[in-house]
Image (cartoon, rainbow, N blue to C red; front, side, top):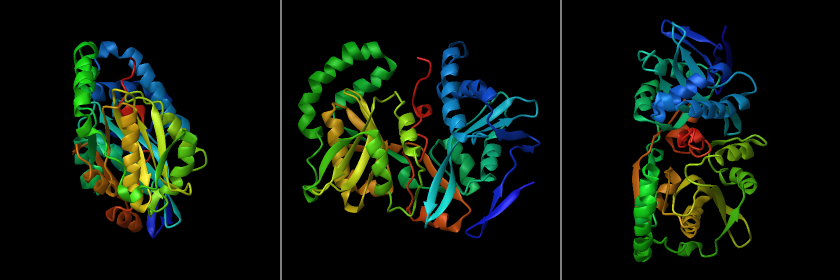
Length: 391
């Protein structure tokens, strides 16, 4: 039996816990399935060989338990597809979040890894999993990391693509160190003995060309300050308050998310900073992963109105002073004009950012770009997005 409620004139259907079809059934992830899901994840996204999986499976399964089961307080929002033969056919990682629009609260499904087992699935798991999450309790579904296969599934299901959010950007500070960092990921010894010394000799010669410029002249009264995770969690909701469709973090939720985000290992520790006016009023804030010699990775940057430029300048300066070789991040509409003003910035396709909702007001806010999406309102903050488990 399905339960129905009204939201903005649209019927909201609460789907049953298990949805079946001739191709199998979809139901919430159970704790006993974590190791099978972890093994599938590692073979699909980390290219691990079966005989090297044991330690990685245990670590990945424990991490999935923490993000998909512990916060749920009941049934998991993540879904599995079980074939008619009882095998695991596919998995869809789903994190629950809260948004607000014009004072109304909305339940959002943040869609993460979507994967199927080619040995047991015959092309039905992906569409079946997506349809199941569409029929659930959520007012909107979103993702900021869809690959091209997921895009092919989602576009016919009336997802709105946000092209400006689908790009990644890279700002190079020390070009030889960037090359060395790329080599280090694959051949650590070769980089340490060959590329690292070359980078240390070459990059000082390019300092004048690649060093971030001074802060914008229009923001000479703006200053930057470091902050900690607690200060960032306290200030971020204020800085994003000018979006029509924005997160509605519950008490304690942002500190928990930031603590989980700080566990990522691929790009170094998580750092925080902010920009302020002369009176000490917050104008913008940012969080990024970084360490000397590595490529910094932006988690979140937000600012009020005309202060995006000064906040981006502050981020660049912090990463440069830390000794980072460069910095990468996800684009967003309000950041694009400032990125275009920088030299040595390169853009690439980084993952599909899409939103789906049956609520007209949500659809309109997405169409106009008046939505905060990405960063903590995505899944790139999780270790599943980058870390190499079991090593």
